Image 1 (cartoon, rainbow, N blue to C red):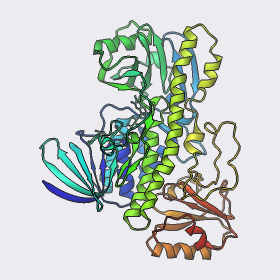
Image 2 (image 1 turned 60 degrees about the vertical axis):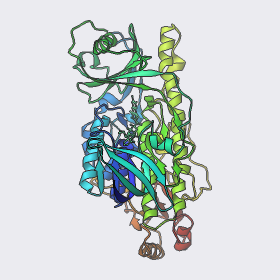
Image 3 (image 1 turned 90 degrees about the vertical axis):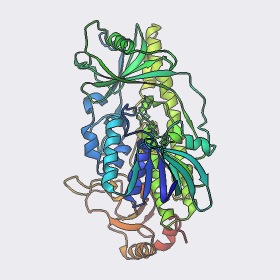
Image 4 (image 1 turned 135 degrees about the vertical axis):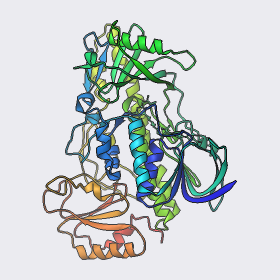
Length: 530
Ligand SMILES: Cc1cc2nc3c(=O)[nH]c(=O)nc-3n(C[C@H](O)[C@H](O)[C@H](O)COP(=O)(O)OP(=O)(O)OC[C@H]3O[C@@H](n4cnc5c(N)ncnc54)[C@H](O)[C@@H]3O)c2cc1C
């Protein structure tokens, strides 16, 4: 059995594993990624990619390619409810956090795309970086953690040949049923939820029923049961979610076609081509740690969501973003191993908030239809459902708290609803706000953040002290650099402030321009190894 050494082994080439690979490639950390599948996904699950995820795609240079796969604003403005699509609509709700239109919040916009398109684009980008060793058809087996590294057995599923890899770190991105998580004895937690679905991927021209009825999720309750249509490309590719249909019951293509026609309220002969059918069950939970020595959990291996709210892989992308630079800094000797513990400290809080939100939304989705069929007034259900897909505060305004972010001594801006509302603000622990840096709107402040800490200096800051401190740290091997704000409108940044931003775009600290002890201040929050 052959043996190889690597800095990082990523198990799983789904959205979380590919994100880790792209980030480590940008950080120039050599790694291996394995997936037991022959290729990227062919039955897409995730479709709704939020602004922060698109910001990551921008960082990788694939924003436009992903946007081109999207269904566009017509399909992402509302979620809708029907008995069937030939009857009058019961309700529609605006979904601003997934509405594909440019805003001042970001250089990007959310996109309704499809996991198979997205994974294929990500993989092509990984190959272009040329840093990763990517192996499909390869299954990760047993792990043995040792003080100097982690031994793991890989098997090529075509040749059945085995090899051993010794990795400094293993990142388990192997999905909700993670076998690596089981090996390191970190159960997912959470209560089992008795909701079973059949996810039916199909092609059909349904323009007759969807013209004017477009929606990111179109819920239906008809003679053959309840469920939803999930458009994929805004053209002829759809998924139907057939509810309360457990794995054990047999579902045939004929049944799926009859169900789809019933949901359309049509007896016409429609050319519906079923591509694939996958059973799945609601699950929501989070491991009580994301790390066991040299092994880390990311994506669904670390936390699982009810997918109704489009929060699942989006949280996985952010988790990978939180972890990747920390691994790189420790591997390069710039930071101590303890930096890696802040991954759980920060990301578990973000994930738990999203799990709670996904559970809340899943309870609300059916409630409107129950009230409608019960002949009750639906005003309360409609009011509650306004939170579905309207959570910019959750996505963009989340505040990390850890030793990496200097505590604020003022409260956050007051808001009616901190999950829904978002006010861009300079606060430690928050995503650094976007502003355009040029009149042509090609360069954003967000484009500064990827591999280094960045000290952003306003015009009134005495640059010399900060330049010297940053140059000294950089000469010692700590990745940090300076960027200067433009003279034009910079709000919510100000010209009399220094803002220190981490490689993952999170503000670590901000100080008034009068602050001159640059070395002392930077030492309060930089993860320096000595
Ligand atoms: C119906 C549905 C709709 C959804 N919609 C959305 C949405 O709109 N937005 C959103 O953000 N999320 C959505 N999600 C959730 C999203 O699909 C998941 O969060 C996401 O796929 C998780 O990504 P991952 O990379 O962590 O895991 P996965 O995508 O599950 O990938 C894990 C990979 O690991 C591989 N693997 C497993 N074990 C091994 C092993 N031992 N060796 C080698 N390889 C291994 C698997 O082959 C797989 O490719 C939805 C989920 C469902 C079920």
